[in-house]
Length: 150
Image 1 (cartoon, rainbow, N blue to C red):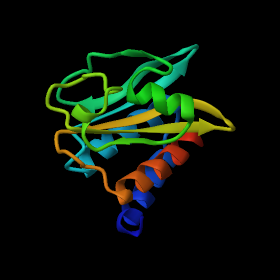
Image 2: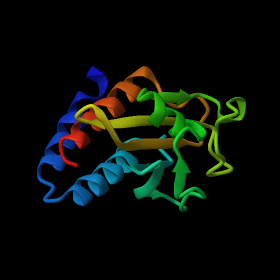
Image 3: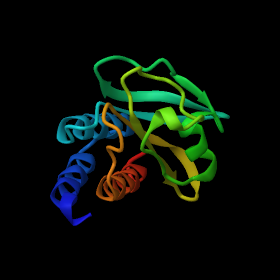
Image 4: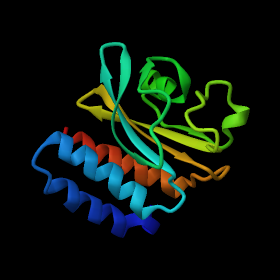
């Protein structure tokens, strides 16, 4: 995590200055998309009832899935277990919902507010095995920062 400490400090300040929850979410996805070259798509899914509903995102194209039922796909699994899901090879994981043909790896990080799921940060990469332990630790820290602002 030390590798990304400066970026985490930058993100903390960026989120702290957000006036509204929607601003914080939009700032977070833009920051992640611009700061990490191997993050090809970054989005936030918010929990609404028994579904995850797409919020702000950054990437070249919109995802095919704007609503994901709890328990479905990698995001749905992370939402149920409340644990980060890292998929180094989406072709080898039957849970993967094909959002983009070029995606090779994905990570889904729950955003927990209080003791409850608020939503998820999800990142796709066109590179296989794109998410290092440092990436995962950074994204989990980013999720905790976002939880303070939503």
